[in-house]
Length: 519
Image (cartoon, rainbow, N blue to C red; front, side):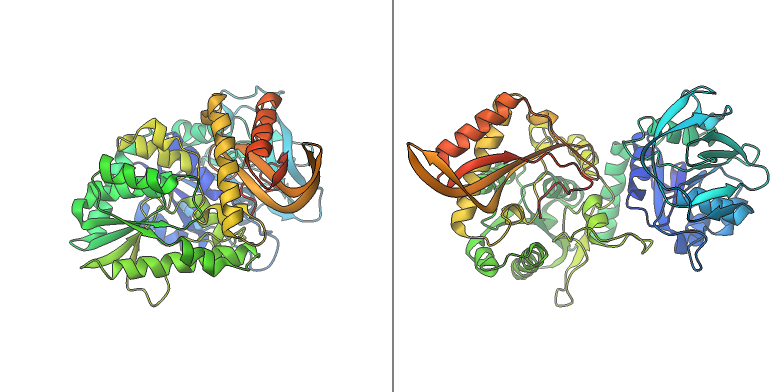
């Protein structure tokens, strides 16, 4: 089945950091959807002929001059429309309501009280009862358009949920797409399946087939070089592309010297022996560590690693006759954190080495079949491709590797210390049977020394931080609540077995306000 044959939802993007989570929730309910920036939404509307439309949140204020609007055609298409946060506000403004700034702001967890029945809230809180949601807005709707009525209210929003049931227009002042709205996925499914009448005809098997067809169309008879890091993302991308074009694919595995302990051996063995995919192993550890010598700034580190990766791939691609494409396992969270969203309104969080296109000197074109997916969806695709749970369940590992887990200057000695400590940490997590319940766990070697005592002697050595988080997509995360005995055992082993470390601490910061990685 091609995208043209699916029941489709158009998501109009106004620049929210979590717009893609809307798509993710819809995909969980097997609904095909496409995200298009508001400036190009009119063309998308004509091309897609969607069965429903969702207007995303965004950082702007609708009462400010030049703030974005939805194409008027959205409200004339005769299909259900759901406005989320900014989407609700622009819907109100465009249809004759009124929005003002300067009122009480609502950020974080909130309770809405249901005032009337609506199919949007079917199966949720009854009339007169409260439903927990996640608010994030500073403006306030003070008047709703003709034909609308209030479905639910909150302390700061008299129009927390509004509806024009006749036209099937709905607005919510909160974000149903985030995990912090516990039953938000149900609300979205009420909209797509209940109100819009979609059946959910899109699956990971369909995604696989469609991507294989797209890769074949994009690549033709050319050869593809895949930048293989050994992580889940690049490996799934490699297996998917190999299924599409077979021996036209060559994988280049670059050992940066910043990988986990024994990782290079594991990767080369996996691909050469299990998948029979041509693999070039490049030991570039001296090159990377040399370029990073004396560098402490995290963004500079990321950019150096990105540049050196590109230079090596370009060099290796030049050795492969007919190579025209570079394949990467770029995911959506990498994209949304690195660059402004397609709307041009989202804020940059941090750059990722594999995002942002290729430099002009490279003749290679990009193939990024996973660019619209989240990590858990990549894992589902990996299983669809026949990869084992033991492999697809591996914790995420960043492209820059241990470089962003050593704040400050990177030295070969620091890398060796961190590799050893990290291996002990993961070993103890596996022994405790906790590995699969944790999204990501890793150690960070801090540029801090503390006084300790070992064998009645004074020590003055490095501090090691342990990090572990629970998450579903990497966009938000909570710190993992370890049994204290497990953390204690990790700390004891690390201090006893890793020279140069005399103290271990545990990071209890969630995302937001922190990021998962330290740099």
